[in-house]
Image (cartoon, rainbow, N blue to C red; front, side):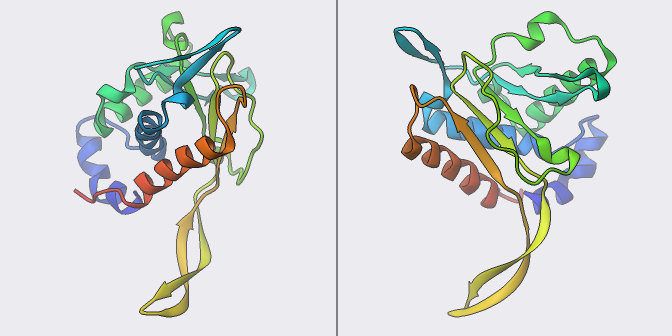
Length: 194
């Protein structure tokens, strides 16, 4: 993702689109929600409603005014540029106090990117009810990790971050949560460079 972003940052900027890491996480979450649809649900007293549309709320800090969660509706229909563009529009409107009421309604899944403030890990994060899951993203930082290269263990410096998934156990179990996060991680680690 970092290589892709570095390669395409200027091209997106020329189109008036700010290519943030959050856009990649939204895109990866869409793929995971499609693979694990139970995470894209609404819990009712007598049933779990699974949504076809991935309406992803993104927690947005408003400084001393608190937090608001604008929603990227039908994110599954958007490519990375579309997600980045819509995310930028929503965040700008939220911070300028011009966010329309419908922009905070209808979310089916939420992302909290607490890493933008420097936090490495935040768990559990409160689920935006009646949704059944929320993903937390920690700060991306360079870390020394043990890798295998040509059959030998080597120490390498890699960009890493912690992801958390807080779930409603009435809708999801640990296996489903781990499967969801595996899709997110695999999507991010294997992002095509073109």
